[in-house]
Amino acid sequence: MAFGKPKTPLTPEQLQRRQNIGVGLSALSEALRGGDPVGRTLALQQTFAPKTTKGPASYEEYIRTDSTPTEAEYLAFLQEKEKAGATRIDLGTQEEEYIKSLAKLGETDITESRKIAATGRELIPRLQTAQILLQNPDFKTGPLTEKFLPLKKLYNDITGQDQTEVSGQELFQALANYTVPRMRPPGSGATSDFEANLFATATIGLGNTRESNELLVATMIQQAKREQELLNLKEKYFLENKGNTVGFEQYIAKNNLMPPLYKQINLQSQDIGELYDKGLIKDGEAYINMTTPGLPELTVFRTSDFE
Image: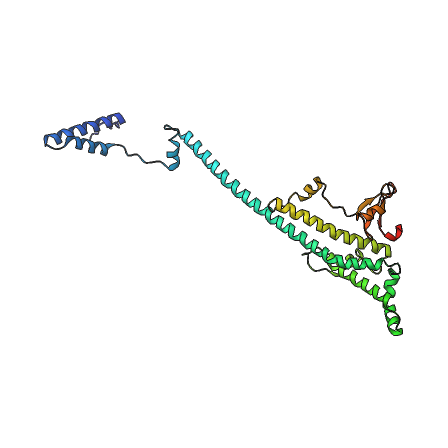
């Protein structure tokens, strides 16, 4: 069997021309039969017309600005659109989570500061009681006083001796013991025996010298009052910054709002009696004596020393 030459595929123009001839012949045949040649022509044109598929919404959006986009232009458009959309979503989510985290940190910070201030307020009345005992010139403390207190209690009980001195020393020791477990930061767990011993050396005690106890009790009272002042400043900052306490330390430092623990007094240039009359220094308050240049001295103000 002999084969002829393979047929050459028709070009789009040749195919379109054949379709037009077919439509014309079909319309002529319809007219010879007495039919509707116009309707027949329209129907055939719709049949032979190439079908178009509507593109995705992004493409339909793009061709409104560029009716003849290239593939590269369209892909670039899609990349920019995706990038812009992702940026808006991510930034919004990150900002919201960041604000929430700051508010949570601020609430935790305020809560812990309130616990510290509350512990200090609880200690102040007891510390002031210890301070009153120390202001009595006949009240004694020290290593020997602590060591012989049980024997003095027993002797006075047997002999019926006056218990006033012993009772004061017992009260002072009880007040000192009360402060020990409360020196641990709130929420940090139970106090171990080792930690309790360390705290006992850092607070007032019957075994300490009188001068040491005076400085310790004054410092602890002033520290408690300072914590309350700092809490008031932090709560104000918290409200003004919508629940955020980040930057609080820098804020009080920049505005010189940090309450000092000790006042600095130069007795050569300041009249301590005038300071006392104005309420700027109080009996039993610890201060830094700056009278001797280069030799600051932490001391306790006693009105009896200036009478």
